[in-house]
Image (cartoon, rainbow over all chains, first blue to last red; front, top):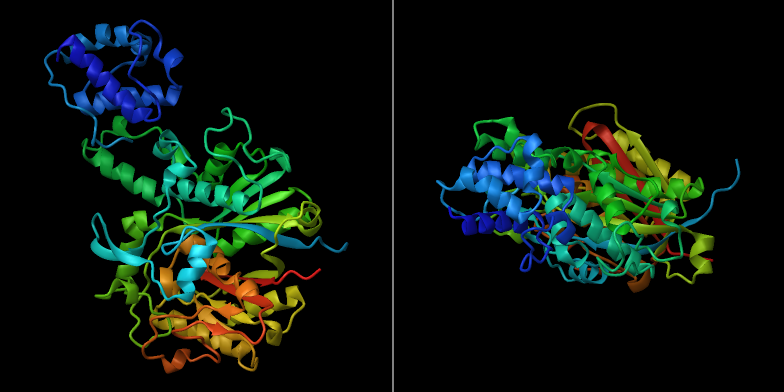
Length: 94
Length: 426
């Protein structure tokens, strides 16, 4: 997965978690929760989907690393670069 | 004891397998239109059920739907529709900032109560989570954080409070398949106690989404089978073979009469009396004596005699023994009431469990306007053991008098409920 694909992957997950939000113009360096309506339970859902879809375990101490899209890329790319992108569309969402 | 306030029904919000508002529901009950269809659910496979088709997104955002439950969505639908029907239009979802009440200015959000009768709640969500976690080798780190808020018993009423910004008491009443009446009854009581000014009371059911309920009825030999889905629910017919499980909901907007008149509300009917009791005899099998006592108690509470009731809406679910037991109770109470007519709504929609009592009462309220009693369908050969006097079959009938309806709902562990509603008279 490239860095661009990591962005696609995370946006795809957010689209499932927050289906009423417009994700087309998200800024890379602005906190996601300042741009769209995401609460703490949504954030935990995002972590859960990363675990389900890609087997990535994000420990609680690292949650802040995922606050922005740029942070997501920086933190997740090393964990995802050897994994293929597959979208959450159609995947079970709990 | 001081006299209690008169309580009236000023709004009806419902979703039924054959209608998503009262006019459509009533029209289909008068025209013999069934809402039972083919249905498939995991582990059970092909079966049939009463399925609702309301537009979930009319009153909820997609995120609300994802986070919540089917019962919550049904309750939110019914609550919004009941308020609109009552002339207390809440406005479209998203029309008010988060946390701001959408219930209009007539009643304070702290003085509105929500009471959802439920047969059960949480089976759907628990089964789903177990199915999910099984795919991950039962690693519970994959168990959803949403499990608890989805499965708490107050979930359907709580989702209504979140959706509408209601700050008053909002909770469920568990009463097996007698529960729809319990939500209504509790709303009446809370209004009479002066603890709320507007009550949304009734029942909801998401039961078609749990395989367990189908499997359990099947194990009991009480799950309906029929090649023609529309004929599967056939209470009182000789060839009946079990229950058609249905989802649905109905919430009534209830107000004290004085408040309703002060705002010029349209009144669907007045709650004249009710009763809830227990058989105290068996986990599953109903008891005719308990049912009879329940109906007699409701009549006494309403200050009416059996002869004063125009429509008796039965609970009969299309099981072999249950229908006969109920017919015996009806014969004892109404056997000598020449102008009392008897019908059954489950023959159209199946058994909507916790919603059944409220939905079936709603389907009969328009009798005060149209003067008709809707029929019981699918009775090709009436079981002689169920041949109660004045059972209305096949076609609607014009009533000689349409002033009162008595609705009955019974449930497992021997709970019985009955509600008497009358045409509003000043």
